[in-house]
Length: 219
Image 1 (tube, helix red, strand yellow):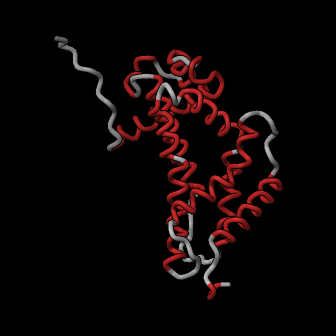
Image 2 (image 1 turned 45 degrees about the horizontal axis):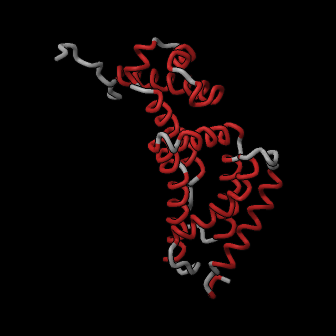
Image 3 (image 1 turned 120 degrees about the vertical axis):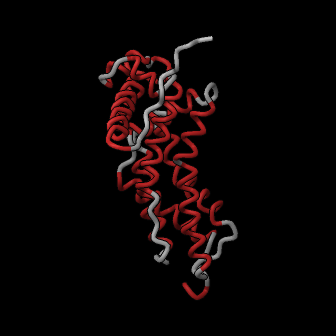
């Protein structure tokens, strides 16, 4: 039996905790560079430590494996992106305009080269490390669908629009928007312009509003 205690995870409380939080952010930022440059399989903890400017021992105090580090990176990045994109004003009853703005924000973010690169990496490792795929889904697409569903439910409750399952409808909307993603992901097409994105979302909104019409009082 070992008499040596394992390294303790840093706390986020107090001034020391804030310093530890900054160190963790430093590691995650370094890891992001390495994963995007080398991919998951080729990335090494040695290179991540070097890029982050920390010792390998310090790196392992925060993350006990490359898989855990990548999962944390995915959760933090996707959650931050979701928080930025999924801000809905439930008082705004202009559903079409709200959907247009959200769809454009969603695609502008998803089609960025760094976002596409992250998705390719996640797709390549999710079968071997399902927790990484789960992290990506829960911190990104699931939040977006749920937040949009909450907005749509608020409009249903106010009698603005007729939808039986707002969360499912929100998923339909997001999936229709993502039609632009697959050709880029597979390197079939170049990244669409902002004008291309706006036209695509406009078409998606039109289909959505036909499927889930406004109530007679709001037409």
